[in-house]
Image (cartoon, rainbow, N blue to C red):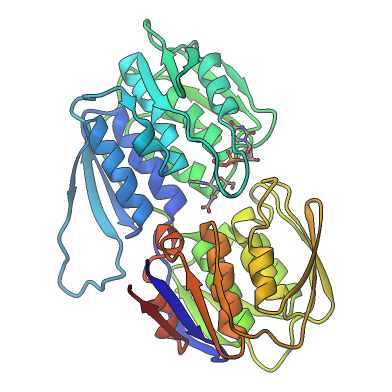
Length: 429
Ligand code: EPU
């Protein structure tokens, strides 16, 4: 298994191109199951999650072509992937495939909507909490699906097709909203989704579905109204830039000091995180090319943060922000409100010398004078990258094991950081 070795203490200066968003690309790829025409996505990041989902979709009958490189295109330019599900050849998504990636459970909605039946393995546990799918199934039931759980699978049937209905989510769920949208677009009649997730990835999926011929109003607000259509067609759509990748590199620069332009990053997608960084003493400027992040000379102030659904501070930046606060002046209080067990990075940050006390869903992070390098590992993607941020500021070498977590969600991480002066290398074994 590959490792990443970081020799800490270098400031970051330069430019980092921001890739297409993993969490937008995945539901967009799944939406290709809704039509027999071709859906072409551009700016798709090169990530192992994208490859894994491609494999799952080809099992259901999606043909895929990846456009070759164009003259002048860098290795970091997103891919263009065309997907065509002329026929869905298998309405079952098996355990072996779904258990590798939770988001693949979302195929249940387009397969059911198009074929009137779907059998999808329940995704099982996950390093950041129990992450049930009850609300996704509830949404499908509100649209007339009959669902039974048998042998670890959700079997959904709607022999006469799905019918529009009212879906009220008791809590905000991104995957629930994606599922509801993909089911409702082909249902007969009107569907109202209340307490819908407002995350930009939901808005991006809705925008793509509209290009495919869907009728959707209110995406990006808590109330989405979908008027079902008989069929959807092909479309071209560019995946939106990754706000979590942008926020992660912003925190890396905040941690090391320096001056970096996050090329293509859109401030409105991560305003809450940028506001928190500003309060911590980081200079943030929006430019035509992206977001410029600077910290020169000044120390970091401790800032308290609660994670929240969009437009609040994202849970997917909580670990990275905690790494940053280990070097702040004073104590920061970080509350995780989305997932019940998303503090797996705490013990590993402690190996770098961080002082963090956990009290239920709150982490009290007491800033320390210095971090020192150590071998570390993490059990999920965002936790792993928080250790990269720690390692960039730690004295000496930090070796991050289980790099496959990083490869799931960060395209060309070592190249992007090295180009700005970080001492980062991948050690293949
Ligand atoms: N929940 C339920 N029942 C459900 C669905 C969700 O109780 O049926 C709970 C979850 O357990 C959690 C909360 O609702 O406590 C929110 O979960 P949500 O459904 O919003 O999460 P998700 O759709 O499974 C996506 C992202 C996550 C991100 C969350 C929250 C993708 C592929 N995943 O997950 O991203 O943390 O939304 O914003 O889009 C990551 O990229 O590292 C990652 C974990």
